[in-house]
Image 1 (spheres, rainbow, N blue to C red):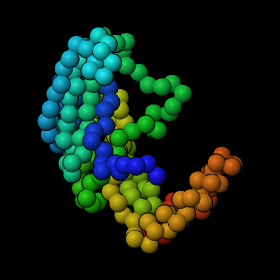
Image 2 (image 1 turned 90 degrees about the vertical axis):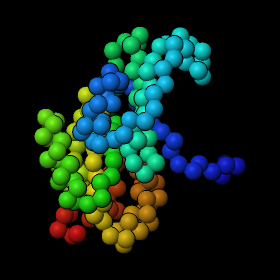
Image 3 (image 1 turned 60 degrees about the vertical axis):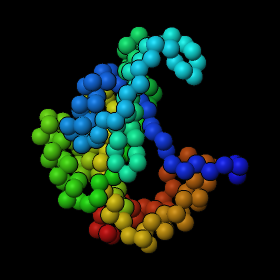
Length: 180
């Protein structure tokens, strides 16, 4: 074990196409609070000349989401070898009523929404922000017994995956909606 302990995530940062558009979208569509901005011509950690705007949004619960607009860099894109569904930001909502209300609100903002999708211990909706980042809103629906069983299975599944690179079947029950 390392000689220190991480207390929480301070912030998570992504690139955006337009800082103002991004802040306004996350405020309007997801209700986040815009809290802070940093702007520099030189990157503090490297000294490299690369003007940027760095904006911070409070997601609630002490969680901060940040974005960089980098006008002197080539147009942003995605890793062509990683499917669009893989890299995403997932936020939790308190219950199914909130998930359904979120879907209606987001669709009312003109954003296409997929779901709710059943994941055994939670249900989710999915959509994209203006910069093309996939966003997930998730509502936990699992029982304490299910979470405990998944914790017990986690090392077994990881070991099997490491050896076979085939999906372990220890938690197939997650995908059978009638079992919840």
